[in-house]
Length: 312
View 1 (cartoon, rainbow, N blue to C red):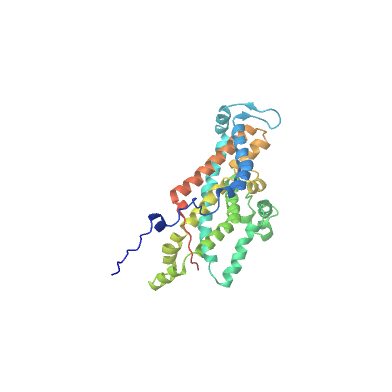
View 2 (cartoon, rainbow, N blue to C red):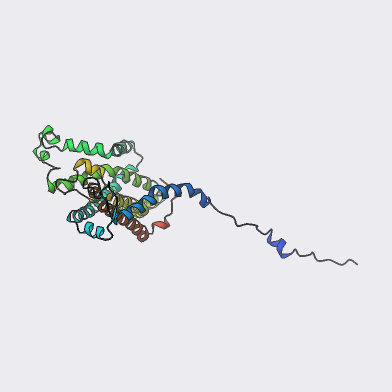
């Protein structure tokens, strides 16, 4: 008579498998960002800290800096020219966004089509982005010259106005030229965003009887939420850095009609030789830019962005 022997149960350690000896890391190591962080610290953080320190000093750029404390800040923020520059900077930021955002969005949606004529027009729309800001400013100064410009060449009196020399017109000319320069870049962002929207969403909407306008309002716009956030952040923060185009086009004039904060910083530091006051303006620009960027990302939830795998 044979006795059945029950199989021996494996120990718990054997059932669980070998114990891991070290924690596995997923993705690249943090040390790979070391060189980039070092360069950023040397060429961005250290100079910024130097500007912050210099904003509390009085210095003409030649002699030894003298500690001025918060009086330097009070003198700068109470300056009517700087206050006017702050107001103009807000106007340029808001109007630039109101003009560039809808135009870029519509052009980007149009350029996302696969028709050949749209590809040709996309190349033409992209051309302003190839020219430097200084070259664009020089060209517009020549075109808008009241004596030898485009209006005189075409015999159109309305175009022969003193666009740049009139304080009531100069700022609007600057805003138009800024939009002409930077709309192509944001159009490319929207073009790429539209091509990432799944085609199946449009096909389903078409079966439900939705027209082009309804598809744009209920599919394209919601799907471009994060593209709009990115583009708007670049527009608003970029408005705080306009310098070369305005400097060549109007030099802040006539009077102070187009003297925004970046230009005011340059003229204060290198024309009036007041580096302490110019440093205060620089710190204000950095703080405002970082604050606006962080607020846009926090309020919009852009830190939770997800990509679409299927595109047009």
